Length: 440
Ligand code: GDP
Ligand code: GDP
Image 1 (spheres, rainbow, N blue to C red):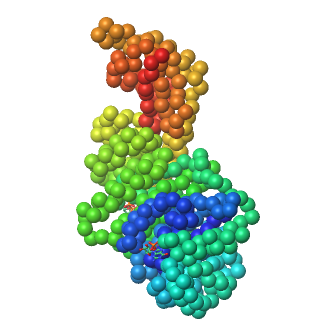
Image 2 (cartoon, protein in one colour):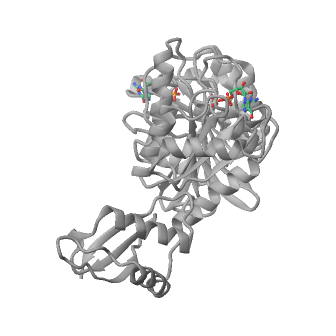
Image 3 (tube, rainbow, N blue to C red):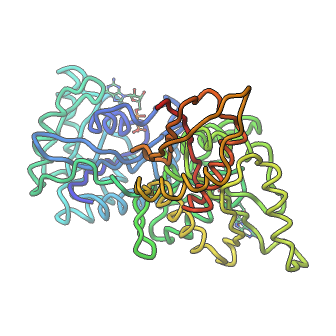
């Protein structure tokens, strides 16, 4: 990605507040308890005619007061690898903190490679802005300190002037347009983070192994088999809590948010547990939100004595539970043994393509009017419904408008007939199809 700014710094200095300001929208939801709900770790903004991408690196690592050196290394490495300009943020209100020094020590190794700006945040007043002088001791950022208040926005204009001077190109307004957004959701322990980490490769993901910590992988763009895609809010994030209900609650909340932001929702099941109520709920929500859906049955390696029919029977049980939603493809995988992981991601991308697919009107009419002629809508209360014309609406998910004389007399069962014929003739695997009747 072009024109990329990364924000690094210890927890609570205000990275996500600045992130929100630079992105210009309140896309990342914050919580004063650090690290609870960071929705997005990168976003887009523009300044004096240049478009840029911002990465809040803090969102990708263990995010609490007890930060480890290894995590600082990862956070800085990520910033240096991904960004054109690095903002190193400190907090004038709190003053110089030992962790600031640790960050500075790591950052200093990369000085000269990328422009690094020292940003003294929470300089809400002049007095506080002056207090920023103590951070000269860090010997960072080419000797200059940018005092800002991310909360009020003061000082951020000067900072951006300096930052965008490094960008030679205008950048892209919407670099993600047309790139499939995929969310991987499912119950805790289904294997979501393992899956995502396998896809991203170990270098591209940051995971702390400490139980109960907030962790996440990089929800950046990824390229597999020539396909680019974005993993939305990848699975690992968890709330630091000991209360079981809380874990459940947050995992459901995160799943819903991720699903809403995605084009395709990949629901991962644990083969040893089968499909559970929560999975069914998210599938039905995804259907209502008109998202593409792929079901992955993970840990297939743990199912013993598999016979020819084992997968088929398993699939039938899932289909029974999610009825009447019949369209999601089901892929049996083992992340552990790296079995069919490629197939899983290819399926998700295919579903995205199905979702975007547009059938030419002439072809649609030729095929569907013939199907309608073969089996016309049954008469209701002596009324004959005549469908004359069909067209696909210009939406980002397939919706078909059937024009007829008496739209209110078309029965649900006939709608299903039409949906089945559309699927039979045109595919659309994994995607909900909308059917509307309009008066002509
Ligand atoms: P992060 O952990 O570095 O991402 O920090 P956050 O953005 O979550 O901010 C930590 C706390 O500092 C939050 O309570 C913010 O409201 C507060 N904060 C952020 N920027 C400012 C600022 O410019 N002035 C003041 N007074 N508080 C700020
Ligand atoms: P998440 O909570 O959904 O992110 O699940 P994790 O990725 O943390 O995985 C939970 C546990 O299941 C870990 O111990 C993984 O090693 C294990 N696991 C993940 N995938 C597989 C698999 O395909 N087979 C087996 N046997 N174990 C797996």
